[in-house]
Length: 461
Image (cartoon, rainbow, N blue to C red; front, side, top):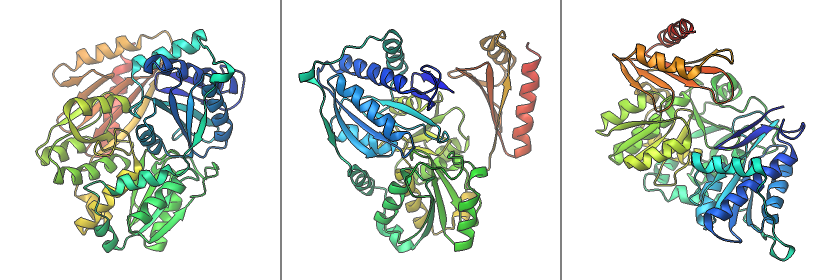
């Protein structure tokens, strides 16, 4: 069993002893810690929290525990029912709530669940806030309400429509262009809340020919829910068989978007943000941001449109903070996460679908033809396992010293930028591992770069 306590939330496998997995006791403990932190933050005795969840089998149980804990603290709860992560983020702002909790383990398999914690802006918490919640939980600094002051529960099970309407109202979303294009679209929603959200979004955009694959939100994931090429053979075959124009795949909480071309080939999760940014920048001049482990292609596309690209530390909260700092018009992460501030500061696959289809419709190109317009980069992801006694931080310092002649960024591990490639080394927060991400113009060059770096690391211990 696994329980991961981090500043971004609490994630674990369902079952086991308290502290080993995400047991009911752990759910209550960390929900209560969040509630105590929230009351201190907003200074209200009876704040309001929005709660939404994906379709995991454990979702109903976890939801009851979370809502009961918050209610016991005297916190009012607005319950959305089945809702995507971006839907919940928007609902926090719409309902003028003081915070939000999303019950989802994102791309993890069905035995996992998690509490993702939001502030009053519908954004993930800062590192300092996360540390404070962990401290409250560790020391059990809880004070529950008297019976006359228990929180109240209300429901808004129709907020998805508000989310869809907000996307349709975005200036750069052209419903008429999409309708005229007459796209046939296939979707794989891994039997979670995307099965409710993505077809609804497509119908609102004027797409009438939708091939729905795994769209029943029952939590029985038909394949590994992370939208990677090796997990998407079914939709790839469906696209080719039914001659669809494009395929969209989302993870269980619908903040990541993968695209598949009409020939069944992967558009490339790294290129979801690249394509959407290309369209946005063609209409709105400005800057972009992605994390250090995302493709260099975004930098190239940004430069083409006269903007400046900035890199942030890995983690959505870090990307959002950097976007706000440099006034970026679009940003996100290379895992298919599109963050469009004109909508809200969170990864949103519904926004990604709408902007990408507008781009595709206006371009007049096939999906595969559009993909060929972008710089060709290939990424390799590796790791090197170390013994617990090895000083990982010391190794990263030595690596930085070895490559002083190159451009080195150390805001999150060590990233070394070469003329036509890069390698990024990150220390795991939970185990003695260095993760190694590399990118180059060919698969072989990316793999070779990673292997070279692994050899260098091994000489340092």
